[in-house]
Image 1 (tube, helix red, strand yellow):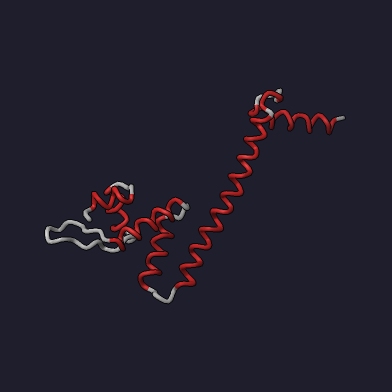
Image 2 (spheres, helix red, strand yellow):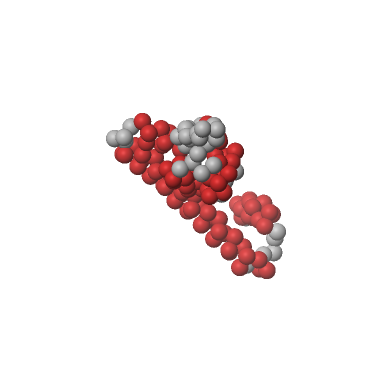
Length: 136
């Protein structure tokens, strides 16, 4: 399939596919007799993998490292797994932080009418209260 069809199938701009190829995320794409890129199922599968890893927050640099290890070292499954595990762990940490933030916002929303002070002044208020309590 041509680059237009591949970009539609992967739901990414054509420029993204060219960039992925130029930085080594995709293998060099075969060209037809007219010099146009011809994407096959293997390139589409790589594109789907790249999209998934980018959505997971993996940087382009780390993803290039993963792809390079995969292509150049067929016996490097442990290194590949390690990179994926690191990304997984990072996502779990982000989820934990996001859950804390969501819990805080849920609390603020649940108690919104009960708040006397605007939320931006709360820290100043509690800081002043601590100082006042120390003087007493």
